[in-house]
Length: 365
Image (cartoon, rainbow, N blue to C red; front, side):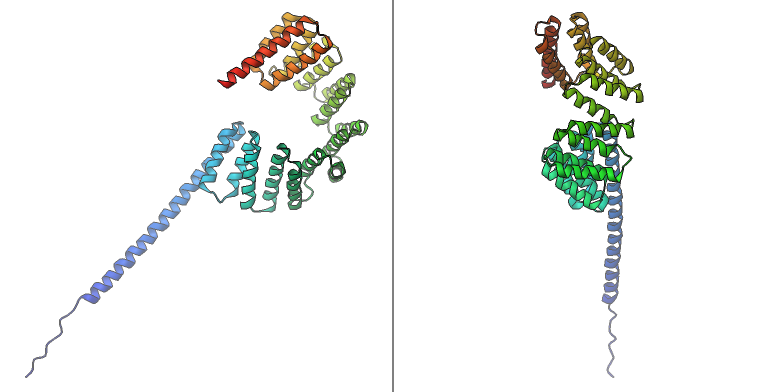
């Protein structure tokens, strides 16, 4: 009798099943781990992104634009395909006077951005950069695109008026100014920007009429008062410039800068005593106004009072920017043309020249 040989049990199917289960299990765990890492990394990156935005906003608010640009630059590093970081950094670059860098960032933000309102904002900002760089035709193009995205926006129309004005394209400038007036007939801004165009075209009578319309519609519109006074000053009508500023003071009797401007017009009219009084009134309201201190020193020098002029100038030097000193030097130079033998003016001019030289030396160290 032939003995049947029973087949020996084999374990390879079991091992195969166990191996497959192990692989699948490890793969599942791997997927879980990958998902966890991805979620954790995204959450971590989001936190860094928000923190960078907060740091940038805080720095921008305190006018530390370099720190703001650095923080917004970190946003760009974390999310290079997001428009927001580029747009915010462009704002900081613009405030620092780095217009080409601002334009480059705005351009990238426009490429990546979405939404008509946001894109209009970016085109407006880039137009401002081009205008600051005196590329007025490119500025007009960006303002025009912004208006296509958000038609009738008054701020953008006003900006395009200025760009057209710089291009000497007065018909289009008037067209946009009239559009602002039509949209807001009881607002002062349209009349103010149209006055600028009339003035640029040389029609000072119509400019004055529009300035006064703006002043009548808004007592708070400082620009209309100041621009009209400046125009009168440029025309040699210093008394009328002072009258406009007095009218402004009726609306804002505690405005230090306004008292300072009145002092300047009074100086230009040769009324030194009144100018000194107005300057002291301004400084009593705000002692930080360098231009008022410089005008006060100029008045003392013009009256031949060198000791007071010297004390006034010396006291303000630590608080003056270089551009303030340069403006003071120009004013003294103009005074010396009229009174070349006035010793107090000569000494004051030399004093300011030395102060400006010293300030440049310290800045270069």
